[in-house]
Figure 1 (tube, rainbow, N blue to C red):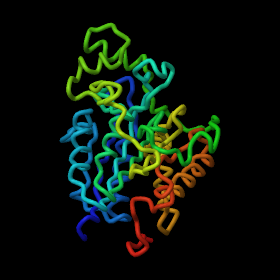
Figure 2 (cartoon, one colour):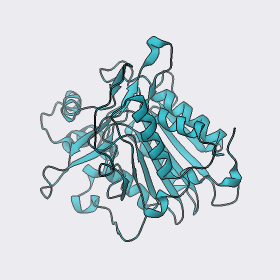
Figure 3 (cartoon, one colour):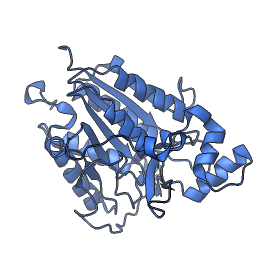
Figure 4 (cartoon, rainbow, N blue to C red):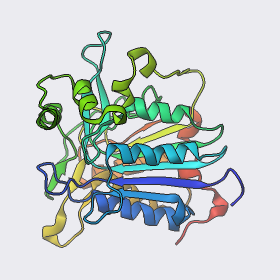
Length: 320
């Protein structure tokens, strides 16, 4: 492959086995994505890093391990590269630090050790991209809308109000409430404060999110809304919604994340290259037909909204 046209991915699936927050389909989600990346999008297997909490996994998806994998991918990128981070697991909402917006909440994903990775961390990663490289995040987790801080909304709450769907299949929300996070961290630190940053810094120190290690001014990474960046977020739901983890094992099927499975359905049923906008719109329709109440969202520049998903070109071909 020509220089600067490489494709790399970090795939993370957290089922949290043996905990009260256990999910069923997240590891299946990343396995399906890995197969699609190789067969449809031409990713080299050696450029796909997979982190899961499956028994015997060589690298657990702890906060530190996920950050290290993302750092390696971004730092090793060259102009024109296509980068993907696919996450399937719990998400959460946390109070925004500082007195300016006391009721604002920030989005975060929850690695297997509860060392949160926040919207600020993803903003800083996007800001480090070399010119012309793209960084797509596909997050199948609750409250994932807005997971790249300050990224422009293309398809979001303003496009379709939230509603509750109905499905007879067994499902669980991919959400850990803020108070449950505090209780878990307090049991580790033996500190009673309700300040999540203090808890995380005590538990993880220099491995904690930039959101809590930097001052509010430092955490507010330089961002010019008039200068589009190359961050692309496809979220499993709006910021105020939950994403579903499906467990149809009683019917003999595999467990899966509703959004991840909807994306796979779109890719299998559409035998042509798709734009980022089309993937989200079609995934919304799949979920609507299946009775889910979550609404996938798209956050990126105007140009990237209509750019091809994962940079696929017509000449790459699509398996039939």
